[in-house]
Length: 149
Image (cartoon, rainbow, N blue to C red):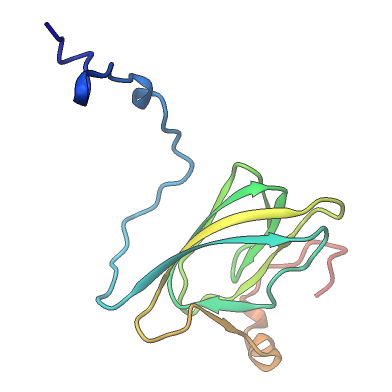
């Protein structure tokens, strides 16, 4: 006779690994997703020391997890920080400038995965021109010494 607590479908023993298999790495307030929005998950790989994408913004929120290496991460109004393998980042999207997402390491590649929600009818990524960067310079957090402007 089978014990339903230990038997899964087809008479196979039921695993108990699910009870300890999950590790919370990031949690945020639920988002409202507008009708017509789309989502994507991408893997980004930067070679050693690569500065990453030029300053840009995303039309919707983005949630990232660093697989290997370290990301130099900077959002408008927040200080630059380093996000290392096994750590997460997120950004709200919309009107916030994303200044940096490059490889913080000079000698190894960096890889991260990002899940992004795209606002209906808008591109996921829009580069920010030098004129707008100058107009919004007062919103950028102070730069660490030795990293330039």
